[in-house]
Amino acid sequence: MGEDYPGDASVDWVGASVQLRTSSTGPSYAASFAKTVTALGAVTDEPILLAETAAAQTDLGVDRTDLKVAWIENVLGHFASDRRGRVPVRQRRGSRRDQHRPPGLRRGGAARLSRRSTGNASPPGGHTWQMVPSLVTSSLSHSLGSVVGDVRRSIGDNIFARVAGPDGPVRHERIHGSTGPRWFEEGAVIRKVHGDASMFVGGIRALLLQSLHPHAMAGVMDHSGFEGDPWGRLQRTSYFLAVTTFGTARDAEQMVAAVRRVHETVVGKAPDGRPYAASDPHLLRWVHDAELDSFLAAYQRYGAEPLDAAERDAYVAQAARVAEALGVDDPPRSEAELRAQLAAYRPELRSTVGARKTARFLLVNPPLAGAARVPYSGLAASAVALMPVWARRKLLLPYLPVTEAVVVRATGVALTRTIRWAMVAPG
Amino acid sequence: MPTDEGSGTSYSLSSIIDGTHDRYLRRFAGDVVREGLPVSLRFGHEMNGSWSAGRADYNNTPAKFVAAWRHVWQMFDDVGATDEVIWLWSPGRADNLRPSAPTA
Image 1 (tube, rainbow over the protein chains, first blue to last red):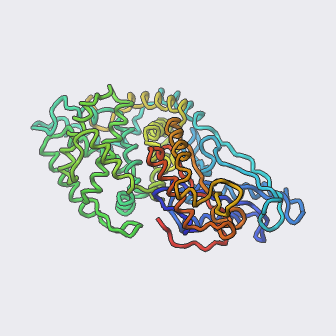
Image 2 (cartoon, rainbow over the protein chains, first blue to last red):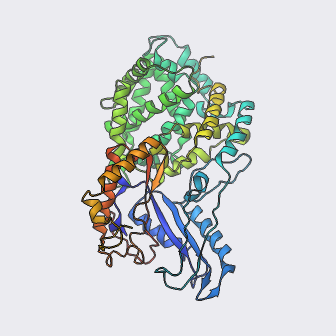
Image 3 (spheres, chains in turn cyan, orange):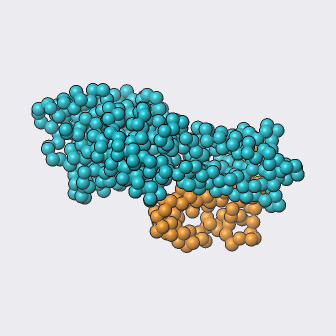
């Protein structure tokens, strides 16, 4: 099978066509999909789609419809819980259980189910095949619709505390209260963007996008906490941005030096066998570019007022100062340079198991209790809606059709008005 | 599944590779760009199957399949259509096939 594989550069998903038939081990996953999934995993790490399936109706002329339901339940259940079949879908309100859907059943049950006839070069066994009923699970629009109402009633206090951390108020005072020269003057575009509540959506989007670089992902998986600790990273990034954007130059320099020291310790070998280092200027630039792209996208959609082209260029140029201090090699100075650099990174990006685990963890399992989970899922959906299509399908993020995107947008606007971005928002 | 058996269809892996169908492919890719909606393309599915693709019987080889796939992909990429396409590589049941080294 491997010799038929055209390579990850021209493949986004791999699909399996597997038929369910009688076997000495019974109507089991092991007898049907398991070996195929294992064989696909030996060829590539790309997501697996259940592309085509059917169940046998008879075996050697004997009616076996009694087995069909068991087959279908067994196979879909196992396929969904297989590590490669897990899809990050949003949690429905009130449900604590993760919802797993087989990859083929997203987007309104887009799985292609086809019929095989006995007459035409059929596999051995002489089966009659019948289509497996299409399983269309609850649509995303339903859960989003119910989110909107709740969001308007919810205050994001829990989310604020989660991002700002327990020291939030103390840090806020130090950042904004200390006197002394600062890197960016009052009224600088970067202060406008980094002080906006849209940064929450931008921050989640940045983590999702960054995870697509296998070396960035390897560093995170090896050196951060459980599942790459996205919440911890969001918190640390928010603090870093607050200090470098609003704090005194002295504090900003100390912060940058501290981060560089930490980066020096983050080295290792990625799953592809190549060494990585967090201080690698090329890798640092990917992280920087992914952040800028995400913060800009979120601000343009949800921010106070969209930036014009000159302001966007100014933002990118101002952010370059911080990036250079951190050791980024040749950071972009304009929006056009940012776009060109991001496009140049595309061939290096991969959908790894680690990236998909992080995405799932970030979107489905926020460490928040009760009502705070509801507005969070709206924020996560907003972040997903801002992701480029190519990045979304690499991470198996749900596709949001146009009508749902409008609902998401309304949710994002409501949320970002409500939630203050960490400790940086004045007042 | 395009075959090189020399009968039946007007296209084959070889004629895809040698560019005979480039106009068709370019027009198809252009339509995808203009439509602007994500589509999934599952070119030559079950290419490893003995019952449908039958590479030995139909004069197909894995190398031809990979070359044809990349040719189609390149045609789409040239007009900027790859961002709209989910490229779905879809072999058949693989239980009894010997996996070989990745070619990525």
